[in-house]
Length: 81
Ligand SMILES: [Zn+2]
Image (cartoon, rainbow, N blue to C red; front, side, top):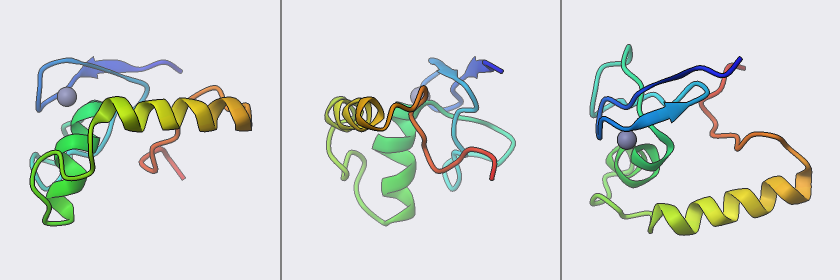
């Protein structure tokens, strides 16, 4: 299960399931990890774009955690429950 698609915010590719881009886009669309972190989540929290810090930093932390936990994929909270 390795779904990829086009991010509706930046036009880049997302892998796996992507993210729900609401409130910036319709629920039917998907966005990439970077846009989720830099745009979508801040928009939900009423922060300016990039209000959570850079995606590069977040990704490093994700990958470190993933290595420690031995998980194959960064979990994003948007995957199917
Ligand atoms: Zn994107």
